[in-house]
Length: 336
Image 1 (cartoon, rainbow, N blue to C red):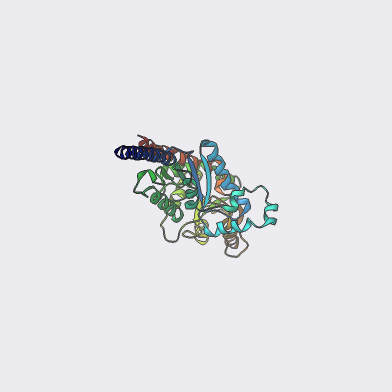
Image 2: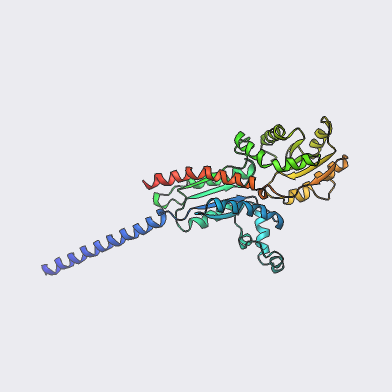
């Protein structure tokens, strides 16, 4: 009887050892899944556009990023709910797809930044760089930055299960708050071709930014000052959603010394989408073009977004190159 008890105790001990080994192996697998560095990822977050021709500006930026970061998975995200919904609806539109065979398939299932990040995290902990494709530190950028900050601070009871241990967000093109001098100067250089085109045509250059109704963005006036310093006084920067608008710019232009009689309009936006095609160059009486025409000004429009400008696209590459070492440092610290 005693021998049988000892035998049972021995079996129990072996079973417990086996369970411990299995648990340890499972824990190792969980650790490996959560902490073995997967291929890093980049998320390019833009407001988005439904205009087929304008999509090329976003894809140009994506291509520049892919070339600069060949070891990263690069994903697109659109922050506009309405724009994503339109693309999703096009997924079942056979005629649209037939008419636009070169559009990337990912556009038909385009997601917001949070959904893209969730998909990336599904494969385990990864280093993630989120790059804003916005021009200024406006509402869209701040919402994106708040999302990334919240995810970076999301803690779990077991640190190993933290979903986003190595994540950061890149600055908008002109930098944070009211713009940063180095970024503004970089933008001025990228806009040189437009300034040269206007100068050759004897035109004033009017750039239309988006602006924001409830955020003071002095960055537009700073950019205008820098552009005038580089290319002369006949450069104007206005906005759709804030001041100065078309009427204010027209009044300023007419009051200027040697007031020009011709204007070149161009979007100060990543894409030449709805705002550029309608608010700036549309047929309605209140479009910028028609307001200036009514004021006796000859107009020309440049209907390409900033993303189609390689020099501007590379601004986002540079922001990613500045961000990457900061996030890599988090990963290195975690590996110790």
